[in-house]
Length: 338
Image 1 (cartoon, rainbow, N blue to C red):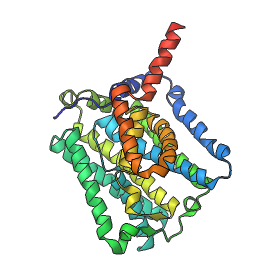
Image 2: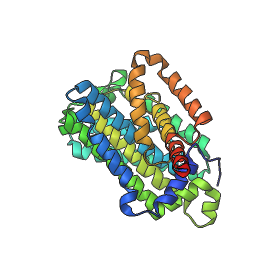
Image 3: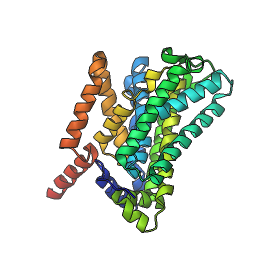
Image 4: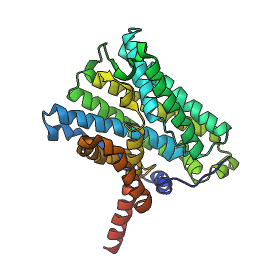
């Protein structure tokens, strides 16, 4: 199998995976509970502002994307640069099934998420069978992302082309865009975090850790590399597809620009790297910070990608492990000195 150098933060992610096996159950899930409590009080802070509530929901959507990406890349070194396309599959699939086939939302969403999961499985399977390294997986998935964008623009009768399409069916509590929608997204993100923690504590977490440390050694030790890479691709892609479907129902309108590379993949890569690739709370910490940053940069839309690139370079050069591992080390040193 092809092997590559571990990406930023994965050494600390391996340490985290190993550590959670040796702590009590309640302590292992304490970060998930803490994140849920903190995020649950956000509506109390922003009060009745619909605008700020929309920004908070967008932040949760990015956190959901980040958890899915963390499972795919942080756990199995598969660089999927098609997060926007996978989210678009969930969003457009649900919208088309609801608008054209008149399927209820609770049927259209699972069907669309299933397609996203199957695409993730296909990318992972090809990467294993063709022994593709991180860079080539990124190229293949980036190519798919561009193909998906062209498909949206070409199938104008279904997707609305560059002008987008409106959600015409009843989107329920999510479509109401109130507090209920916020807590639906929050519930999904917390469930994602809990699932990620469960994976870390299970035998799957040990297999993921072995894949991150040395894929060739993992294969020689008897780990089914294809099985666990496909598993990571399926779970992460399904997560991204579900968030995309929910966000389409929340907004009530989607267009190709909603899920293009610069609006999904680049911010998610930056926010996960900021928190620490592979660490449990990296998507939550990163999405919180970059939702604020993105809002500040909104008047300078042409400079957003440039700023993200500068931040990513700074992270790779100055904080290779991400903020969470760096802060953890600092706290340990301070406590040790004390």
